[in-house]
Length: 106
Length: 423
Ligand SMILES: Cc1cc2nc3c(=O)[nH]c(=O)nc-3n(C[C@H](O)[C@H](O)[C@H](O)COP(=O)(O)OP(=O)(O)OC[C@H]3O[C@@H](n4cnc5c(N)ncnc54)[C@H](O)[C@@H]3O)c2cc1C
Ligand code: FES
Image (cartoon, rainbow over all chains, first blue to last red; front, side, top):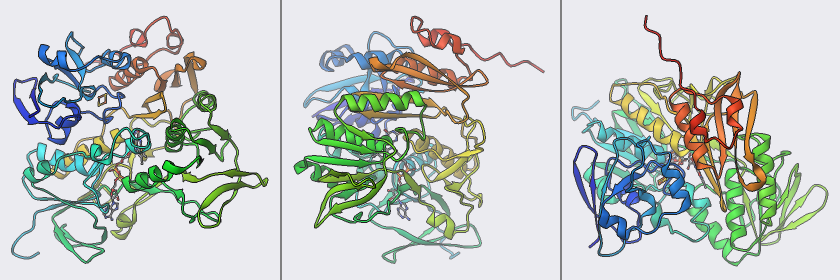
């Protein structure tokens, strides 16, 4: 099973069973998880899919591209060490992901 | 109305705006039934990737859905696919009944039109030949992808965003690609001359043949398209032709309902049509936009952001809490490895500032009116885009003198709006 645990800014947790190959952003949108907007559908144009990932998730989330790095400099809530664009993290079979969503995306 | 009062909301058009409208109604606590009707045979899906990742074979149509079937079921949103609403009858109480082409009747208490737009058709000899395509739907994209599979050459008629995206995607697949544009420059309707000139150079560098001021006489071919003939007699070989000359808003139902239509369904800033009980949102709607300057009091935008934001406003209006549409318009276009992001609306600009060198394929064009920042086209410059989008959203500006200085990040040159004076 592939699981994503989304923690909202106010602490509310939503647990979703994901599909391998689908991004954390898409998984949130398809299941109506609040806190992620993802306007550009994952083409790295909007930075409205900003999340803070846990240490364990950071380890399995893959490398950040230069473009993602630049886009993160313009997020609504200032980036932190564990900031990622959730559209760039594709789920891997059997893994569990933990992300916290910021208070604002736009 | 009958004793069993029907209190359903009918949303006509099950795409970007329609799905968002349903989702926002639920977020706002609406518990009444929602029926979302779309004439396409698919679960609601995103269009932007159709000309990009999908045509490059990177994703399939399964990757495009907005929401899972479970989500729609859990939120009591009935999705009716493959049915066209042919007519709508109104009752005196504001509700009514819609009839589909197959004769299905759908009663409703509240009505939202999110009917979008359809490709503008081209009238040319040979236009109906197999191999000539338009691109709006997943089915269109599937047919194009299949055509490109065995094709060696593609001719794109129209040098707008969708045409150029398809051209770039096909070029990446190794096809010989020609773009025919009737105007003297590419994407002339939307961007400055500098941005147009950049696209011309950039696509030519990637091996795409671009013909400006093109005058097309006919599409040639016996059983299927074989080429496009220009008025001067030149024939450009083509196994596939894509026509991308803009869209026409789908206003037929609005017209039938007697609503005001003027190249789009006319709505106010709260998405109310000329019958204030009916809302409209997305590509079909023509709305006063606080960001549009100059001579245009109302604009019809064709973008994901606009469809989403108008849908949210329309939902609030249906909930009896109308508020004004106020959001910084933005748009993106990915053509091969060229990422364009546009923030704001440049309509009515009187000056531009070029930031960076277009030859490096990393630059921005900032648009001004009376010295005030209106918009920016940012090419492979996400930081400039983010700075401008956020400045416009706060009513801030960037002085033109500072904008050209690439040694200073744009974000650092933003001048905040004067604090409101207390009265
Ligand atoms: C190939 C392509 C690439 C794009 N790329 C970008 C991009 O990069 N960035 C961006 O911001 N935007 C892009 N867009 C534009 C964006 O997709 C549109 O702005 C958006 O889809 C508008 O949403 P909408 O819901 O208003 O209308 P639409 O998406 O047009 O949806 C309207 C739906 O209503 C249905 N309908 C209409 N009338 C009826 C009826 N009588 N009965 C039943 N159903 C009906 C239609 O069939 C359609 O499914 C692109 C569009 C295309 C086609
Ligand atoms: S969804 Fe737009 S950048 Fe991630």
